[in-house]
Length: 115
Length: 113
Image 1 (cartoon, each protein chain N blue to C red):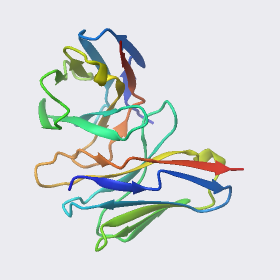
Image 2 (image 1 turned 180 degrees about the vertical axis):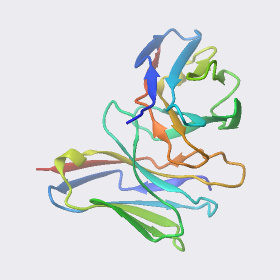
Image 3 (image 1 turned 60 degrees about the horizontal axis):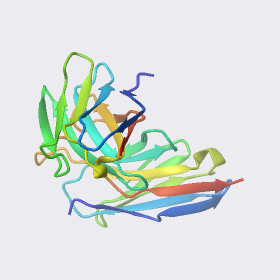
Image 4 (image 1 turned 30 degrees about the horizontal axis):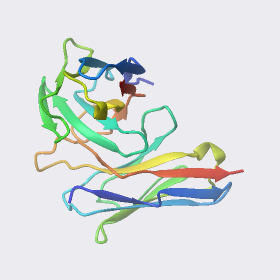
């Protein structure tokens, strides 16, 4: 119930294309859904996050779509660039139920954007 | 932009030895976390720390692990008697408040021989 399932495991996209990464969760107590970007040798860097009171959040080329009823959320990267090549992790956290904000991470998606 | 800093970047230790990983969280943050990432796998929560005590810990965080905030700036993770399976990247994170965005350091690569 605490799992976050992420797909695909790897993704190859042409420059200028749209990258889409999907995540699904079971625990309806989750109410905070961040996406992290990780480059080799670096820590995860927060990219964008959403809470369940909205269905979409956009920041520049990055958009999170959230479907509460399906318990799914996805990251869309528009106009993908070679510099976006990294591993992307979705995560989920909760405000209540005794959890002090620890994040449950998906297994990650390795994105390669070809020039 | 303020950042979480971790030292050392790489630690090599003999099995059975004690190791201390150090973190300096962002200065106005109140919540502190340790996560680990075994090579090629997902990031896993170890422990959260607030108001000078552990808030929550995962089943990974057994009696061999401890955390401490020895002064106003450092946050440490100690592994008392390291095992081969403790080899991983260890990330420290901090946040301003409960379930506020967590900011991660670049990690310490721990190699147990």
